Length: 82
Image (cartoon, rainbow, N blue to C red):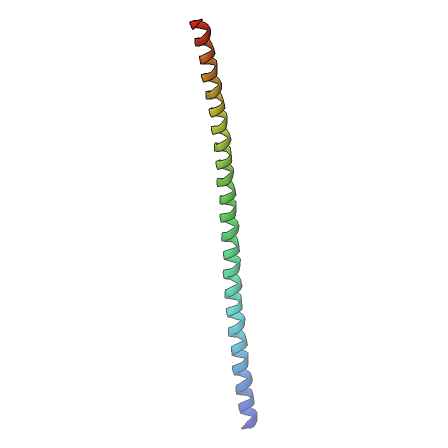
């Protein structure tokens, strides 16, 4: 009877180990999925930041061109008025 109880305890322990391994695998899978999601979102964020930088650079170029255009226009008016 003691031997039978021992076998039962071993079998129960083996089931617990199997359940723990299964749980561990599920957790690892979720961690990997989360890491992939972070990687994807980081890439999207970097691309969005690059677009913002490009847009800012374009805005500055347009503002500079407008300042130059206005400046050239004022010079012409001054020459015409004199």
